[in-house]
Image 1 (cartoon, rainbow, N blue to C red):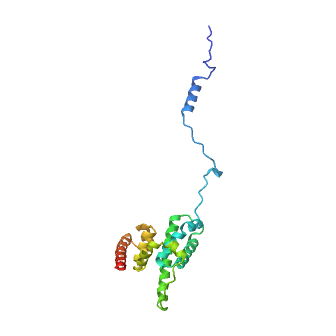
Image 2 (spheres, rainbow, N blue to C red):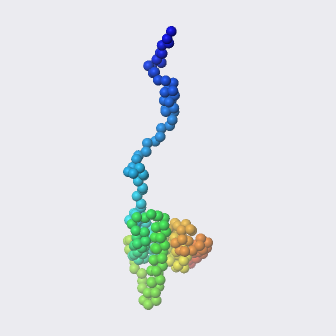
Image 3 (cartoon, rainbow, N blue to C red):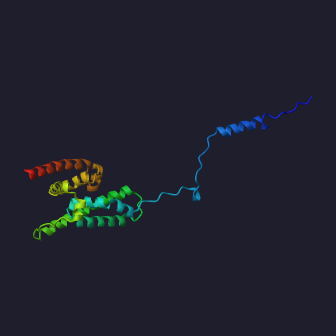
Length: 208
């Protein structure tokens, strides 16, 4: 007597092997869909530009320079020259922003030093004169409560002044200061310590 092959409930006539394949397919995790770009490669992120760096860092660099040269107009010229040198060195598209920032900080410090050297030379031949009154632009960069401290900072030795300005006004680490000034980290630490002692003494002398 021939056996009749009865379909399974629900009309599913698939073989056990086919059902097993479906279960395996359902159990396998789905792979996330990837967006295919031209050429099958991801488009690289746009590089930061010198123009973007200029808008983000110009004011900070002016603050750094004015604490070294004590003149807003001169500080702005220093920063402009530093960005010009940065463009000549790296171009508009910046491959390494950290490297560009290190170069920029070093340029601002070195150009500020050059200004001070020229100023000392000029003062050797020109009679001293009263400095011009602070302009409204100066007040934006230099807040009133810091004027006494800044006056004392200007009387520090040049290297001490540079270290303090970079450390406490530009928030640079000892390693960054060492790279910018061409010093060892130990020299930066000892110079900063002597500068703080000298600054405290100057402030006490003003109050007495």
